[in-house]
Length: 262
Length: 303
Image 1 (cartoon, rainbow over the protein chains, first blue to last red):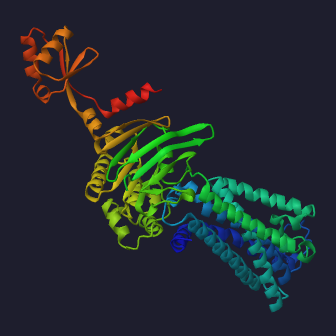
Image 2 (image 1 turned 60 degrees about the vertical axis):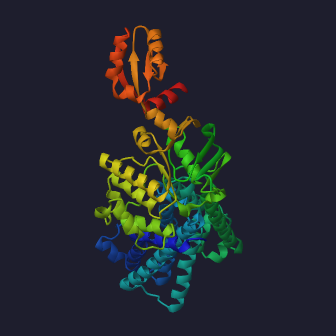
Image 3 (image 1 turned 60 degrees about the horizontal axis):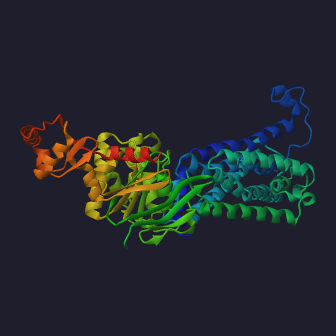
């Protein structure tokens, strides 16, 4: 890809100067903070009631105050919250070129369009991975401060796999968001697509077809609906990888071939 | 390379709309070529096709002797462009916007950015966020981006857009010096006719997607030339007299148009001669048709 490094430098500069990294990090930090709050409540519901953290009418069901539950919550946040927050990142990286009318300045250059799109995907992958790492580390800090019982290094290892596995599967499906932001020439179509895919993922999972529907797989992997071994098979991961490849190829194809009239 | 730009039967259709219809352009190296048309005439579509941003429905495009092929391939390291409204990354400074352009153009000279900032009089705005610039300064930034890599060919869509009168003169002088001193070919579209008229060595007019006229230097010169318009009661007698006196003239409606320099410089002499010959003029006026009249006449006729 001719000009990949200059493109990566450009995309990194745009990201550094933007407020979107800070805002997405703040938005994503809600997950471990709320998780920490739940742990406080679950540890001593009566104390939480007397402190006014929860209503006296609240019925707390499911979940115990331990690291396993807390990590499970963060893994689900990476899958479900990630679908939304990572989509914002992707929509911004691609959609901004149309909102700011800068797409036309990326086309007739000695740097190939493939290099520019490749750099955009690379920045998205790095950014979203850093966001996942951020909520995992923040979760560790919050969990330690709240003093949750049930810590073990084995649990830490498996939790790391759960959180980053969920995040990786979510990240793998982002090329469709990039494609919609490109074809729709702006943010809105990609946001519409993201909401639709989250909605369809719920329906597919509820109907028992989640293992065949790529957008259901990250949440099922995170344990949101029970142990993943019962819910997902090898075919589920293959479908996610194929969907990812289709999204990447379609995005590259669109930038190479479609008429750029804006 | 015979032509810097060459299109053969360039056609672009968007659904049922024929945006550009069988356009044949030939722009020679070193020319300043004015591309005129009303809004929606097909100027920007043509420029986008020249830059490989849209695929022609029919015909082909060659830029600097190289075919503009599939997937936007072309000699873009040697081409600078400014298409439609100037754009920039608003949260980045002017310098950072240009630094991106420098790197994407593969310009190794680290000083290129500072040089172009100075050349386009953007020094006092260099560290200001592009989002805070006025339209005129944004246009300068767009021109700076187009010129940064010292291209052989410049494709400019409405380059005077948003500039104040002093800025217009400055950019005009800059473009003229680029063409005359560095041999840069300039292809500029505009609907500001006076600008094109002052700059261009050749002009073509596009209307409803079709190239309806091309004027070379001679035709432009003729268009800009002055004539003495004379109105008389006895048109026939006046023509006989002027012919016998050796004046060259043309007839337009009921007006005799004398093209002799001597007549244009001393219209009082003509008046005296005609009075003496018993054909006193009712009206004497120095006329100069301009591009605007010509353009309106052409585009009006074809509506």
